[in-house]
Image (cartoon, one colour):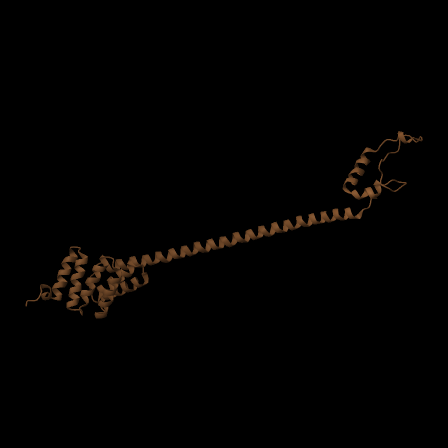
Length: 247
């Protein structure tokens, strides 16, 4: 019984077919071919790096990372594996890891005299720039948060000072009212008639005060002139001190 056509295809042939599909930008189909090559021969590092590049193009970064790590286990000197690993970390915004792997890839490429053009240095510059931008953004955000926090503290302190000032002012007003009420209370309970409201002879509250006539001649009672101003004072005192009616 003849074997199926797929079983007769070698790992290298699957790799070459994957390369052709990759050039046609058929990354999913290309990755499938590299998977078949790996199944045929799982000990070849290049198969993993090729499939990793397909995953990078498809933005399947977790799968790309796994393939790069497997490739490095098989070949720790694999520049492509380090380069793709750095690219994955760059896309995932793991800038420290990206820079570390890209720098290793750059150094190994120089040691092995491999020509990758400006691909590795360019990716390394981008990673460093993005890391700097990220650090700067965090610094600015922290400064803004600190400024907002300090502003909040200052406003809260001013509000406390205003509250204390209001409470102090209210306390003074309340003290003044209390003193006034106490004076009023004491004056009501003292129950003494001021001397200037008492008659000079009887020493009792004057009901109908009168003034000295203009002449020194003796006058009768009906000739006396009522002292209206004094009477108003007396009437007001009586209104405020009802007890004088029984005095």
